[in-house]
Amino acid sequence: MQLGFIGTGNMAGAIMGGIIKKGVFKAEEIIGSDVFAPGREKTKAAYGINVTDDNREVAEKSKVIILSVKPQFYASAIEGIKDLITEDKLIITIAPGKSLAWLEEQFGKPVKIIRTMPNTPAMVGEGMTAACANGHVTQEELKYAVDILSAFGKVEVVPEHLMDVVVSVSGSSPAYVFMFIEAMADAAVADGMPRAQAYKFAAQSVYGSAKMVLETGKHPGELKDMVCSPAGTTIEAVRTLEARGFRSAVIESMKVCTDMSKHM
Image 1 (cartoon, rainbow, N blue to C red):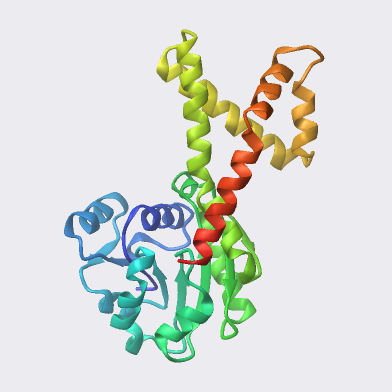
Image 2 (cartoon, one colour):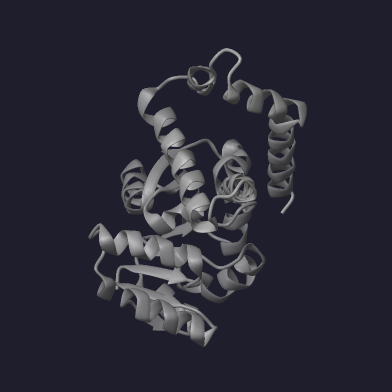
């Protein structure tokens, strides 16, 4: 075994799927542990990996270990495996609010740790992940971790002080985008469009708009202006969004999200 997951939930599954699809690791080279039997068996059926109910088995057999349990279980998960973590093993975390200093304290000894924040679009190979490493990780090891994380989307190495911002701008933001798509579809349905078709139109518009930002390099405001004809339908919709506090609501929601991450 080379790659281990402690926790086999949705995010772990998304990461596994991307890694296997890109050929970074073969399914038989991956092992995942989960105390919840239906969960680990579902993951085994979906990805063909090895599974166990024993976190220590994962720690013993893996060179790279991804801690993919929920944040509230990090302390107990680390307590159960820390005596098995040797200086040649690499720990990757995906929990918000768990700093490198906190993680090192839990292990109680020098350990190679890379803290990351992925998001759920990893499930379709379009994730956005931020990563930062402690002083025990070499540049070569960080690059290796980035190669693994790149299997399910884009990766940026950032200073740790930005990780809480990452939570709000990419980690949690798919939820805001899903709400936006749902609201647009609801409006279309109210005006007579069938529900399934409304979701397709709204989702494709969001997808295409995001792709324009990434691929044209133009400022979002410039792209917005390109759609807004004088005295047209779009500028009237934009005026109404501004009157209802659309941008302010997004900004304030993200600031609350960032603050919550800082105090987890």
